[in-house]
Image (cartoon, rainbow, N blue to C red):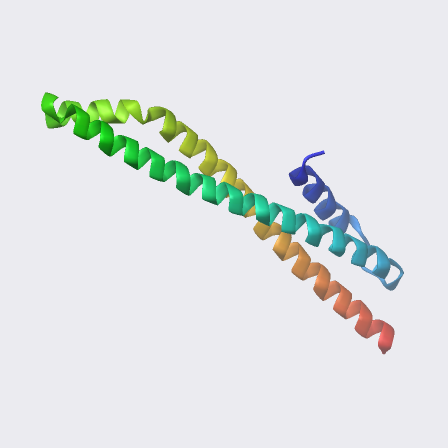
Amino acid sequence: MTLIETITEQIATYNATDISAENLDYLMGIRKNLSYNAYLLGLDTARAKRQLETIKAQRKIKYFKSKVEHLKDGVGKAETLAEVEVSELREKEANTDGIYSGYKIILEQCNEVLKSIQQDLSVLRLEMNA
């Protein structure tokens, strides 16, 4: 099971759990596991962001190097040839951007669910102490 599938399952489990004092320990366990997996996803998200920025820089460098090489053929042709030469990097950039964006959305969702779990736990603790 992938990390994203695990997180999705944990969120679904939380959503299906009855919020009551009997489930306090269970909710605390869900929060602990989801927090750890959100941490791992945060690392993956940061890694994808770094990779995206690296690919963007590589594409720009390759584009300008290619353009300079082909300037003798004219500006228009140089730009066209440079675009052709960076097309694979553009595709890789788009794929990496999609991965990064997906991770970021899921990470934000995790954080919202963790806030909700924390609120539920606080309410349950207040009820138990009352």
